[in-house]
Amino acid sequence: VRFLANHLKAQVRDTDILVRYSEDQFLSLHPKMDRTQAEAFKSRIQDELDRQRISVRHGVDLSPRVSIGLTEFPAEGTRLEDLLSIAEWRLSDDKKMRAVAHRTLQFPS
Image 1 (tube, rainbow, N blue to C red):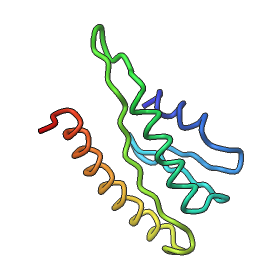
Image 2: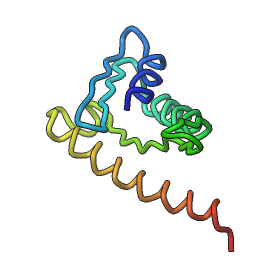
Image 3: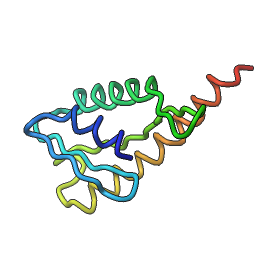
């Protein structure tokens, strides 16, 4: 989690806000970013982290695959609860899609 926090912290701008939302989740607010920029940011972060290798113990390295859920204020809601609900739903969907893509890349038919 520390590696991920440091990596994310290095990616946000002075106008952005990054907080640890739960044990292994982070919330990042980007007030001056439109949907296209947010999708590009998401793709870049995921691509960068997919290429990283973290040593978890001697001889065992893992890639920190991350799932990201995006939502847009005020287009998709103005209440924090609504925006978090949408982002969590999209994060879950992204996690499922990335798991399928990872299995497909690992075990081509």
